[in-house]
Length: 123
Image (cartoon, rainbow, N blue to C red):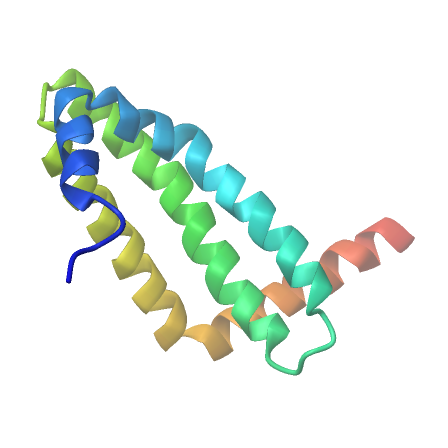
């Protein structure tokens, strides 16, 4: 039995062109956030949606900014494409794990910040 998707070819492409990882960090992550925003609008009535949105958007948002800075720096330091891929994956999954562990506190913080912002706009 073999995969219908060829992972090895993706790794060869990333290795041959490490600029793909910089482009992913700059433009791919916001596109994923945009797609997830549309999908989350469809399921906004679910009880766990607020916590899930906090986890996903916070981990993607921070990995977008942090990942792009690190990817562009390492790209100019001529680090190989596979290493860039592994570094970006470690960044994202560590931020995702952090957001999962601290999801309750992060949900409270985002709710508090949104209420403060709406109170300032009313004044």
